Length: 275
Length: 286
Image (cartoon, rainbow over all chains, first blue to last red; front, side, top):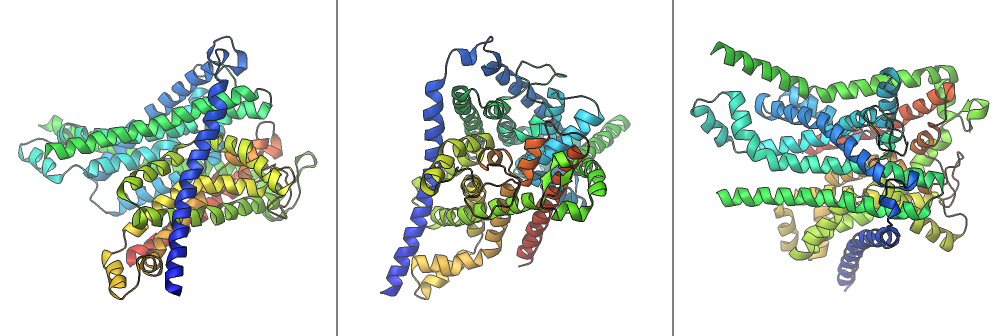
C-alpha cells in the first residue's frame, strides 16, 4: 500500500514538473506577444520615428549578424575540417582544441563584452562600432559553429571518403567535393543557431557596438534590436515601444531555430531517402 | 603533380591555423582581461578587493564581496528552482511520455533555449517582479525574482543534458529492477536516476555556469543595490550586473575595478568548468 502511494507521488511530481516546463514557455510567449503585438504601430517601422523606431535597429542587427558570421563561419568550418578530416581521431591535439572550444563556449557574454571593448574599441582604436561588435560576436559563436560543423562532418560515412580516394581524388578534392556537400545542411543549422544567438545578444554589444540609435556604417556605433530593448528600458521612457520591440525580437529569434530544425529534418529525410 | 602536392600542404596548414583559432581566442581573452584588471587589483589590493564590503566608486572604495554574495545567492536560487523541475521534466520525457507529447515538449524546451535573455528580463520585469511584490510585499525587485528568471533560463540546459544522461543508462538496469519486482516509478527513481548521477551533476554544473554568467535578465529584475542580500526578498547586485550598470560612465580606477570584477567572474566560471570536466572524466572512466 505504501509502495503504491510512493509511486503515485513520484508520478505526480513528474507530471507536475513537465506541466511547469510547458507552462513557463506558454506564459512567456503569451505575455510577451499579448502585450507586444497590439502595440505594434506604423511609427515603430518608420524612418522618421527617431530613437523609438525599430527600423534602424533591424538594419544594424542584419549588419552585425552578417559580420559575425562572415568571420566565424569560414574559420569554424575549416577548423572542423581539420579536426575531422586531417587530425588523427582522438589524438592529443584534437583533445586540446576541444577543451579550448568548450572553455570559449562557457565564457559569459559580459566577459566577451569586456574583451571586445579592451581589444577592438580601445587597443585597436576602432571605437564603438559595428565592426567591434561584429568581431566580438564572431568570437563568441565560433564554438557553436565548430561543434555543429564537426558533428555534420562526422556524420558523413567513411566509405564515401574511401570511394573518393579509390577513384584517385586527393584529400582536398575529397573534402570539398565529397564530404562538405552532404554536411552542408548540418553546418547551416549551426549557422542558424548562431544567428539566433547574435540577434538575441545584448551585453556583449553594449560596450562594443554601443547604443546609438541610427543606421550605422561599419565604423559607426549602432544598436541592434536587443540592445534597443535594453536602451528603451534603461531610459525608462518608451514603454509601449519596448513591449512591441520585445515581441518582434521574440518572433525573430524563435523563427531562426525553427528554420534550423527544418533544415536538419530535410537533411535526415534526404539521407534516409537516398539509401 | 608537384603543384598539387604544394596546394594540398598549404591548405592543410590553413585548416590547422583555423583549428588553432579557438586557442588563440581564449589566450587573447585571458591576456586582455587580466592585463586590464591587474592595475586595479594592484592598487586596491587583491584581498581588499575580494573581501571589501563597500562599493563606493565616488570615494574610490571598491569591494566586490556583496556582488560575489549576490551572484552566489541568485545562482543558488536558480539551481534550487530550475534543477528539480528540469530533472523531473527530463524523467517525464524519457519514461512517462507518449511519443507524440515527447516531440511537442522537446520542441518547447528547444524554444525556451532560443529566447534571448533580454526577453527573459522583460518577462521578469513585467510579470515576476509585480507578482513577487503582490505576494510578499516590498518592491518586488529581489533575489527571488532573479532566481525565478534564471531558473527558467537554465531549464532547457538541465532538461536536455539530464535527458541525455538518462538515455545513456543501460536498458538492462531498468529490466533488472522490474524483474526484481520494483514498479515502473520505483525502477526509474531508485535505479535509473542514481545510475545517471554523474551525467545529472554535469547538467547541474552547466546550468550553474549559465546562471552565474547571465547579465541582462539579472540587471532588469535584481534591484541592483550593492549591498548584501539578507533575505530572498532583498534586492541584490551580481558581478555581471555590476559591470553592465557602471561600465558606461566609469573611467580611471573605477573602470579598471570593473574589469577586475570581470576577472573574478571569469575565475568563478572557469572553476565551475573545471568541475564539469572532472565530473566528465570520472564518468568516462566508468
